[in-house]
Structures are given as structure tokens and as C-alpha cells.
Length: 263
Ligand code: SF4
Image (cartoon, rainbow, N blue to C red; front, side, top):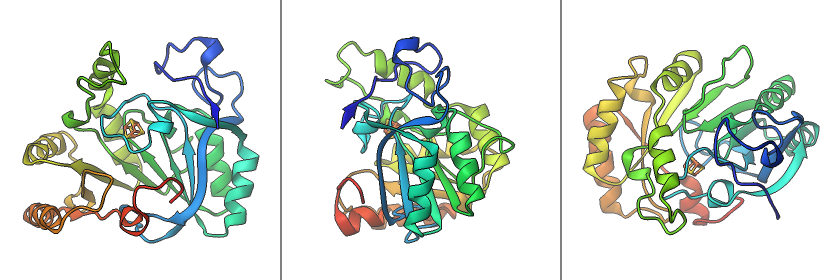
């Protein structure tokens, strides 16, 4: 893998370290890609659907428990053209593409990529933390899969962040209510939350009170962790979902393959 420059800011990235396809990049036809693979969608409303995954490398957040640090904390990968990515998606012959990251909404080139996938009649899911909105007039997307980050995601006393600069940035960026409301209003959507404690549930309820367009049936809770959850954890979370008419969300890829890249 080729090391890519680490994205440190949304808007103030020095030109020499601006990854291709990102805001301010001179080349809007290349995207930093950490991996592509074909598998089944492991999470959300389309769980089990065969999909080609296109993972962009680079993120404006640094979640403490990020399960793809090679696309956030230490982004790596290669620069690939939109034509190349679309050809690979077509060749996969699965009809669904999952644009994920990292944070795919960081990159302007996500727009021509999704336009080309739409032209190829491929269903598009975009997986995002919901901190950046792009309008549907510019971005083709059939399912906006939004995963807002709760307070427990902030990397406190993390050895990867010795000065605490990322903890501060992450905390200030992790919730963008106007962007979330735009994405929820403008796109078919689901909201996925990673949950580890009852405190997370109260935080989700408080957040949802600020997102009035969300239907409870589009709120999905996933247990935190990169290993299959215990029966006790699953049962606790199912009870909490049923009480609120939310959905419990499995992680099929973890159940099937464990925490393994490319699955
Ligand atoms: S938003 Fe996603 S990719 Fe970025 S740090 Fe958090 S979990 Fe990792």
C-alpha cells in the first residue's frame, strides 16, 4: 500500500498534501482508495445484499474505536480513476455499490463517481458520519447510511493523538445538525448508531429530538466492538430497540468473517 497524506483539516489542507478528489484538489478524477472488494452488505437495511465496496481513504474525524484506521488515523491506499472504479463495479455484476470510508463526503470526486455508477444502473449506498452535506442535484445516492458519532467516539488520552489535537477537532466536528437534517430530508436514509452503554441511548434520544424528519424505523442500533457481541449484549440492545420502535442492527460480516479487511 502507498501511504497517502493524512487529512488534517476539511478546508485548510496545504496544497502539497491535498489528496486527489478532495476539496481544493487540482485533480477531480482521482480518488484515494484504501480498498475495494465484493462481499455482502453487513449492516443496515440492505444486510445480506451482494455489493461492491469502494472505501475512500481519509476522514475528518478520528473515532476512538474506528474499525478502519487505515482509512482514518493512518490513511493508506492508491489513487484510482473514476473510470477504473466504475469498470470494477460493473465487472462485479452485483448491482449494488457501497461508497464508504473514511469519510467519502470529503471528496468532491464522489459526485462524478456516483453519477457514473447511477448511469451504470448500480444501486448506491453512501456510508457517512453525516458531518458534510452534498445536495442530491449533485450527488446520486439511493440510500444515505448515516452514522452520527456519539460522545464516546472522541479519542480521549489516545496514544495516537499525544497532543490531543484530534480529540478537540473530533469533538467539534462530530455532530453537524444542519448537515444531518439536510441529508435526512433530501435522501432515503438510515441512521446507524454504535452503542456500548445506556448513556449512549439517552444521547441518541437527545440527538433525535433535533432531527425531526427521522422515522423511528430508520434508527438502527449496533453493539460496539469488532467481535461478535455476546447474547447478553444483543438481548439488552434488542429490548432497548423494541421499547423505542428502533431496529437492532447485526454486523453480518463480523459474524461471518470476524474483523477482517476486505469482507
Ligand atoms: S468517521 Fe468512520 S472512518 Fe472516520 S474515524 Fe470515525 S469510524 Fe473511522
